Length: 412
Ligand SMILES: Nc1ncnc2c1ncn2[C@@H]1O[C@H](COP(=O)(O)OP(=O)(O)OP(=O)(O)O)[C@@H](O)[C@H]1O
Image (cartoon, rainbow, N blue to C red; front, side, top):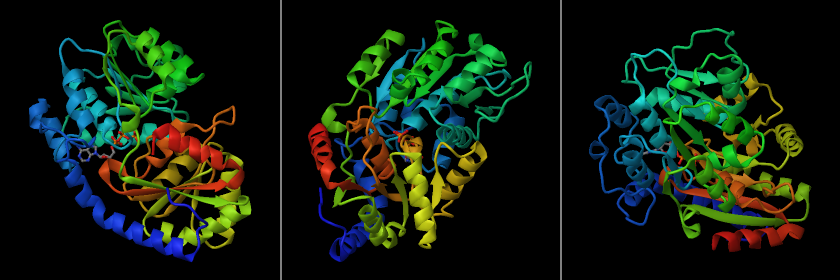
């Protein structure tokens, strides 16, 4: 890790690194896809994975040349007959979404006009993003549609849902299945839990996910995906999805070599703010996400930056759904280059141009201990699919021990 206050020398070094990483990113993906130790490596081509012709067309239209390791390994398991359950772990940005989307699209029958697959996501933004991937990848699958089971999109009781794939957050999907009864769980043949460790390991999410699972037919294929699974969550996953195929990473494989991690030790919040000000110019060469621990800090930071004439977008859980959708869309389209957010965007969000992640605060759990998994998910918002990325954590000196714990935990 690189240390020191972000002074002029450090800023200029960062500048160089960002330019270098932007130039090297594309090349790096090609190199990694030929490196057997990389999570992007595969022996097989998409043709050899026996995808339907319309899906092959979709994959190539998205610009994918070869599958990644998780896609190569998971797809044959997911597409096998009889259908098999799968619990799969792979690093951030290595193509898990594409893998389970291909599995759902392979299984739906476009002629049947009712929901056949459900994908649960922990956040509104991630559900929207996954739905968009389904729509893009399935663009040649005539008659296949997606419906979003999200707060704010509430069809009337008795509505007839014709879309074959439902993407949504657990509470709303549960309502659609059990309360409104507009999705018949008995017709579901694939049930995906994205960010599965949260979906089954965190109270609230878990209660809803498990209730939906209970009303599915026993033959329904369960697919659990995440970049992180704590040991206790593995055990729980194994219990609720018995007889699964399992793809698991070793601890030392979890961090990505293509993301450089730095820190800057600061005296207090104001010094953190000035450190951020020093690197703002560098950060906006491409796009950046700044993570804060609380909504309050995120709001404070966004207001302060706007007052100082910086263009930033705030996205936190206190915004309305329309405001959240608008904020992520603006950032995705590159209309704003800096997104200030909380853990609501820590997982899954995929914006290719993000070359820097800043931890304005380190993520901690409810006991005030470092939340290693969230750290990994946050920094994984950069360095997508082998691109180069930079993560900078601003740390108050009294919390430097947390940094050591992160280094020890990941062996980096
Ligand atoms: N085979 C491929 N070739 C090229 N690009 C790919 C391929 N598979 C996925 N991608 C791209 O890589 C990026 C990351 O993929 P994706 O979002 O599926 O990763 P993920 O593993 O689900 O990440 P996270 O753990 O953060 O949720 C996306 O922009 C996606 O379009």
